Structures are given as C-alpha cells and as structure tokens.
Image (cartoon, rainbow, N blue to C red; front, side, top):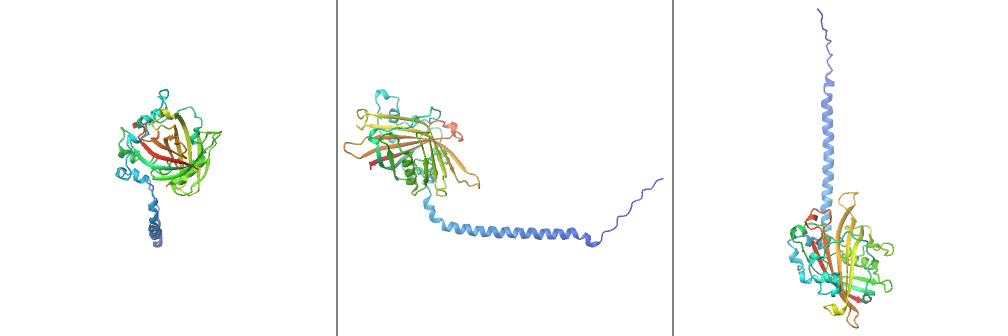
Length: 346
C-alpha cells in the first residue's frame, strides 16, 4: 500500500491578501483622474468653438450660390430656368457646314452637346481677326437647364460633384451663379492664340471677388492641351491647384450672309477634364475631385465702327465615369449653364 503525502501550503499573511484590492483602488483612481482631464479638455474645446461660431457668423454671407443650386427647393426661385429656346442664338451654318458646330448649336437641343473623351490631341484654338487684341469682357449669368430625361432633377442637384455646383469646379467660371463678372481677354494678332494666363487668372479672381491665383502655367507650343493653375496658399479652401486637360476642340466661322444676325459669327468649343486639388476634412489627406464639362462660345462680329462684340457661353456639365449615376447618363449633359458676353476693346 502506498500513500500520497501532500505538503500543506503555508498561509499567506493578511497584508498580502489586501494587495489586489489596493491595486484595484489605485487603478480606479487613476482612471477617474484621466476621465476628469478629458472632460475638462472637451469643455474647453466646446467653449472655444462656440466663441469661434459667434465670430464667424459674418462669413456666412460668403457662402457660394452653389449651395442654393444644390437645394432642389430653391432652384426655380433663385434664377429662372434656362429655356431651350435660349440655349443658343439662331446662327445657321451654310449647307456645306450642315454637320459643323454652328449647325449643332443652332438646333437648340442640349442632347446634341455630347461629351467627347477619346480623341486625337487637338491643336490650339485660333481666333478670327475681329477678336484680335485686348478686351474687357463682362459676363452675365443667364440661367441653367437640367436636360436629362433619365435622371430626376432632385437627384442631380443633390450630387455636389457635378461641375458648377461648387466654386472653382469649373475653372473658367469660378462661381457659375455670380450675376455679373468682368475679366480680361487678350488674343495675339500674330499667332491668333488667346493668352490663357491673362483670361484665366482675371476670370477666376473676378468670380471669387479677390486675388487668389498665384500662377497659370501654359505653353501652347509645348502642350496646348494642358493648363496648370496654382493658387495662393490658404487663399481659398476649394482649390490649391487645378489641372485642366483639353480632350477635343471644334470651331467654325460663319459668314455674315449665312448668319441670322447678319454679322460674321465665330463659334468654338473645348471639352475639358478638370482635376482639382484642395484641402479635405481628413488631416494629411489632399482632396482630389475630377469633373468633365465642355464650353461652347458664340462670338458675333462687331457692327461697323463699333468697339464692342457680343457673345454667349454655354457650359455643359457631364457625369464623371466614377459617379454612381454615370451609366444613367454616360455622354449627355446633366446641367447646362448659359452666360451672355459683352467684350469692349481696350
């Protein structure tokens, strides 16, 4: 017979039994101190933010008209909808140009203003003689139209990524809904090219109401289809830099005898992809937004001995390929903006 002998474990002193309880009390006390610290810090931040709100209330008047356009209940109240009859002046092309840009614009059908993405890189735009020189241009907002038959207007205006719904989402028209804007335009008499540095910088600054552009980088000889726009640091939240890529251009000169206005008319278009870099709500992460749109200009030659020319600018905004609604309207515009132009020779 074998026996199993167990050695009795010696009893711990009472003070050792109290150690876990002591540690628990200390831990709870430290946690309470930490919680009290964060509560105090949050209270300070809350007080600071309340003060900041009271001091920044005056800046609410600087909210862009894009906020109004995005609200479906305000669209018909703030500015009249652009009627299809106002899309383009009735400038008729000759029979030989029945498939040209002038004829397309004369149809007054926004569904014809389809996006053009995959093309041979276009050459720089040249301008006719009656537009050569330096001009002061007054741009007046005329209206807008939602031509899509597949996407409801309410769904479109809720999509802030559509060009024109935020400031600087269309570089040439930095604030689409601004009633009147003046800028400079200069077209060289020798090269017949527009000085994009002058027109873009003055147009952006004019639409914003203050100087924001630091530099416009453009060399038509090196690459006529790319423009870089750098902004003064922290001058505007919507953009630190804008990159413009031109995918296609069209132009046509309609003689006076073929124009409804009895004046020589020049029409041209540019299909643009814009990439905007700016600040985001996430620290250390840059905001990058892509948009696609096209400009359609109509310029009418001046009457005899006149120093002014009149025109119209249509801007068709398209959905980006990454937009969830893209396949509902892949090529036709979802919004069309219209501006009247009056250029006075300097």
